[in-house]
Length: 121
Image (cartoon, rainbow, N blue to C red; front, side, top):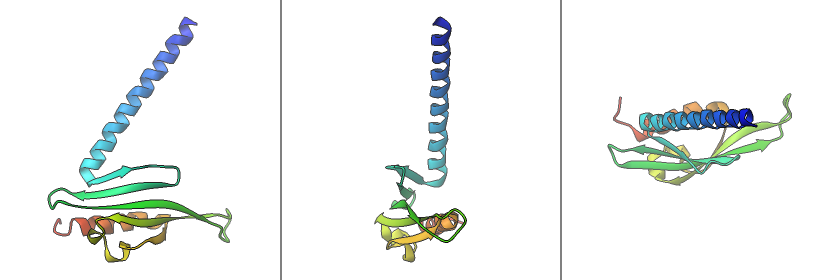
């Protein structure tokens, strides 16, 4: 039992270290990009993009949308973007709800960042 307790303590210590490192990485990404993710569920998350220099922020929710499609897996996943706050800082077409394919996400996020940081080149 002592060996088992020691093994469990080691696993807990390792898991704690991993969590601490992941939190540091997330904090660095937040600092580098100005993007914060909150209210994460299995189906959605809220994204806040902040430009501290200009004092502006935009907040939107991304939600998984599942639909049956005629493809090999029988199911297709897309995302829905619902603007929440600071919509005037989003690209015009994102100021109302839109649905898009998952592979479009990097392009859309680039456009959000371009809009939030227009004079940053």
